[in-house]
Image (tube, rainbow, N blue to C red; front, side, top):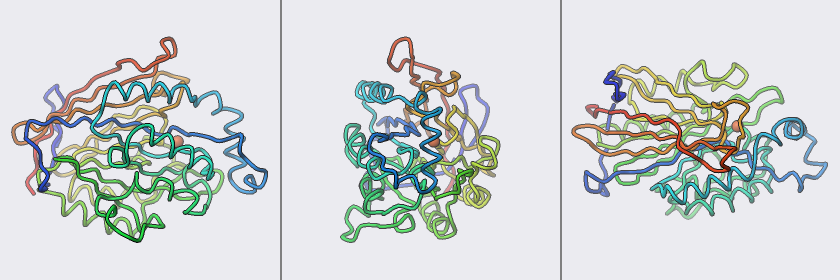
Length: 336
Ligand SMILES: [Fe+2]
């Protein structure tokens, strides 16, 4: 794939083709945010603490309670109503302790944002904080995660391996969801994709390459090094990068770092943008950690794509999201 910042520096790309391709001039607007960490502290029972959740609860009481704010999420919802994106991508940690009550609360919040076909979710490590009953947790969000083809299936997925990776195609945009969530010991927040999912991902990347699609991969853990510490890393990032080097993708979105992270992944075809969003509910100890939503405007141009990225940043003084930085890139099409 190809990716050229507005300053003209060459970066890279590939492509898909589907029957539902709209008029070439149609602009697609995607909103991306991450890590809202929605909690239901009031509904916690003592038996919920007989595991890693005790650490999550203590962290919440000591630090995150003041960091993650419901009013910021309410403000984000209002801002999205004004932005009116064609689609919303949320890259994990929707809950804080993977409590069934949190999953239900998140479900209601997702419904307030859009329909399952308008919003795509991948889980984060906090969503799999401990082992849980699938039917009381992830089943609540199933329609916000599944591939287009899984909508038609009569037997719903009941594990990450059943479900991921996912593929949703909206016009010329292909949304590829990768799950890295897995339970960890208290000190760790690592993620893994696993051999089974990587194999299926290879098929999706291979099939979607060269079809004139703008492919966006959503993943919670950043797939490149240097963004998070060893204890928060993606264990099989090298295997993922190997697939990306072979088949490419036009854009990678992630969360997990709780800070802005604008990077690129170097592959033989060029550079792929890797964009990390901070927590969508965070007041932010520093400006780079403050709640943000990224609005991508993607339009086909010549043989490739024009991509405009506009930040919407929460302003504690104004109690609303305001414009932040803006970048523009050109992504040339890569031969399939
Ligand atoms: Fe998080």
